[in-house]
Length: 313
Ligand SMILES: NC(=O)c1ccc[n+]([C@@H]2O[C@H](COP(=O)([O-])OP(=O)(O)OC[C@H]3O[C@@H](n4cnc5c(N)ncnc54)[C@H](OP(=O)(O)O)[C@@H]3O)[C@@H](O)[C@H]2O)c1
Picture 1: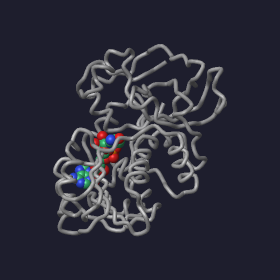
Picture 2: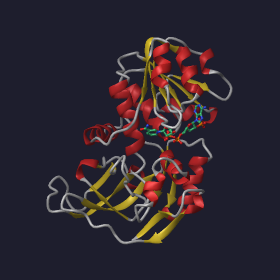
Picture 3: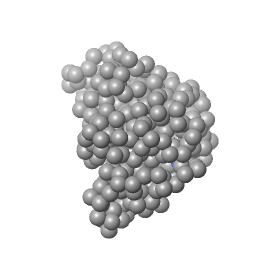
């Protein structure tokens, strides 16, 4: 089969399409023929070199990727929940390697859910990791109720555009920071108030916020604590830049959480149901053929991603 192999840590040209052995499912796994795969910033960081990279390079073939949508073409004898030809999506084998940048992927049924009929297989690969992150952070950590005042940073990207829709679904009043070009996009998703972070300091525009969902980290944590009310909560997800969020928040009488997504089938099913009922609409702004994976990585790296970017097989 064809797969995108990482040769060494480094620039995007370290990704190359190669012929590798097709994986064989165990008795407890299914084999999925890939249709689409979401590209996430963690894969760009792993490609360049982070705490996962050496382990991935030692684990041949070294294939990035966790998001997956495709069709089940083979199943192990113990698999009862799925049938051949089911169209499924999921975040595979996270936080170990999912190896989804490939024509065929082995997956455990607990990582998979059937795709909603309203979503094309070409788009569905862009959903799991970003949507699960936003859903779990906002459902379990933010405890949003009617009129909870929520501020979402980087709302126009993968996690953020899901976050806006989930926060509205849970009843929140949603403030966002994103660029001016994304204002209409983000308003259509339900945001109540938009701050163009390139022109305006969000600290000058709002106060007494109940929850901040921080997708940027660094000084955004210190700045966000200025608008958070006493007893409020900041949930920060970028693992490279959210260190110290708990202590910093505690020092201001707030709660800080360094949040990490978990592979939970129940949550993905709930997300799938929200998509099926048109309560949440994934936005896939760019599709690349898998042979153009370098362009897909470059697009995320240049910043300004609108919704999600996927590669298709
Ligand atoms: N801990 C976890 O489990 C977890 C899970 C998923 C993702 N993450 C991390 O969360 C971060 C976001 O992920 P993502 O997938 O949403 O990224 P993404 O799709 O690449 O989106 C990034 C967004 O940030 C916006 N942006 C950049 N600088 C900004 C600023 N100063 N203020 C407001 N918006 C700004 C960009 O658009 P504009 O500048 O045009 O507005 C873009 O829409 C990444 O660091 C990722 O690794 C962590």
